[in-house]
Image 1: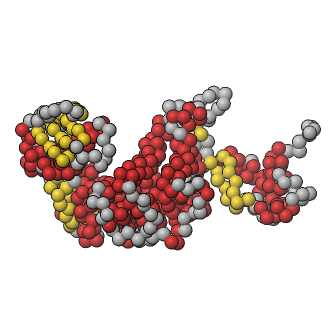
Image 2: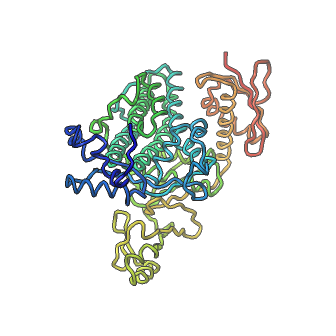
Image 3: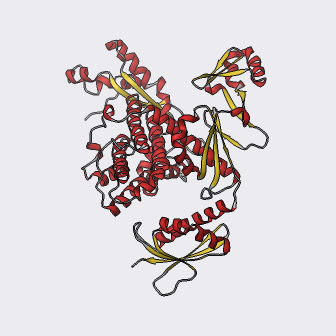
Length: 525
């Protein structure tokens, strides 16, 4: 090895990388001609005037070709004070500490899902709060879905199979959703859109955990041998296996752990990519069910506004807007998710609320200039209409989704929540009569007993004897009225009100709505 004393130009050398790295044209001619131009390169934004530029100059001059097909141009990682991360300043959390505390997948997702891969800068705090949120919102839900499947499949001694022909509407929905996930991640990764792929995975995780599994719980608890139970196990297994194959490039470590646990195979990273052409596709079902999920989110937001806990049943949720007839088959699912006795539909929005168009003057002004004020005036006077694809027409101008906002204005006495597309609302009846109140108390008791079961280390399938010490007559009346429901939900073969007799009881105290409950339980003989 010898030192070259003189360098012609460091940027000339950098731009020569595609061919100089393999000593072309003196060696490796066949390899170079097969690999040039590169599929992609990646560097940060400052290289648009450096490496990217000189590669183009030399590739054009020498080969009359571009030096690469795609470029991932990322931004700069900054600290909480917007300073560039520096080894000298040590203004960043230790990667080793992040790995040990939150895991390598969490840091990987933090970077891969962020705007930094689209050229924007990214701030990271020393305490790693954002990375902690990724564990909560992405990694833990995936693990929880896996844990849920294993817990009940092992209890029932079920060996699930890969199949996508379950006839139930929830199964068909999540299988079609899985097909959409694979195709969307495939498109995003083919286009080098890594944040887009992450967004698809995150959206799917929400649909899987907060909709499919929650709405399917009773099916996993059904009698052994039932077709619905078998369909639920096979569908969840299939969905997890295929989704992990698609998500594994983004979550390689947790994906590996779960996939091997599910299948016993050597590695998820040795598997073929799922064949998207063979996966179910049902756009109409997916669209309708996603609309139902939006309705549920709006209904739960209203409950939060009224400060009514989710376990408290309510009388009715009213869905107002076009397309309600197509959602009637999901009424039971919506009622279960929002915890209401009935779901009604109406197309008469004007009876309950109106939408006001608010023009984004800053955005519209750049495009329309002097006409902006005319557009704003027409919007304020209500002279506008929807024209599809999330757009509106006002004063003869078409405004895109980023150029306006539709704000709901409820009629007097109506409390409502708009749906995301501002094409409908939900109205919740918040009145609670005595029967609903008692059912809510019974549900609170069930939740407390379930927590006591977990603290006692009982298996999900263990039957129990139960003795409840309740704080007052209203609680006792509620449990007496819904005794069958409480026993069924908690697997209690015996339920008494009052202190237990005998020994070997596990006692747990809890405070619910400001009152103390004591749960005594033991495994049934």
